[in-house]
Amino acid sequence: MEFQDQVVLVTGGSKGIGKAVAMLAAKRGAAVIIVGRSLGALNDTADEIRAATGARLVTVAGDVADADTAIRAVAQARDHFGRLDVVANIAGAFPTALLEDTTEADFAETIDINLKGTFLMCREALPYLRQQGWGAIVNMSSTAARFPTPGLSVYGASKAGVEAFTRAIANEAAPHIRVNAVSAGPTMTETVAALMAVDQTGAVDAVTKSLPLARLADPDEIAEAVLFLASSRASFITGQILQANGGGIMA
Image (cartoon, rainbow, N blue to C red; front, side, top):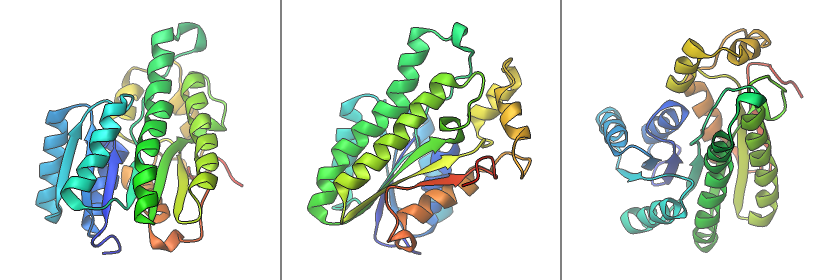
């Protein structure tokens, strides 16, 4: 129950890694705010988490690339729970396309969700965390930020931006607020499973074959890394990119 009496805000919380983070935080005592585009999916996830944990939970439907979503999410923490302890920016777009097949709309959506969405939520939450005098932010990166993979050029660029952004705001937020990121390897989410069924670039298969552990991660494994960085166990860690990638990148 290491998050007992804490409030954890999770973007992309209705499915995949975000859902796993929200569920695990709730199991460890947190009240949870989940943010996502689909109100129906959010409500289904909220019902599932409540049934499994009995946790207090609030949903916020909206696009993370819209500043209003971040404003409403932080306001929910303040109005419903009176505090905000952890922000986990998990929402992400994961397109796979070779460069010549990538449209400007694809590029804009990927940058908007992965990088702008992280920026907006951090910008809105940081003043509240400062006022509170405590908090942790965990952003979501990917091995694609460092591992050049055909079909993931725009995605990798967006995540490289997340890593640079994380290190910069870790300096700004110190000493009372810690900011880190998890660089996830290929993970068997609903989105990845669907892409694997139709992808013609071989991107996911190429990355998986390169891993010493020779498998995709389970979303719960990435959630464990996120909540480690959010917890008091990581109290002297900030500005770091934790590699949870099956050995795909070794320091």
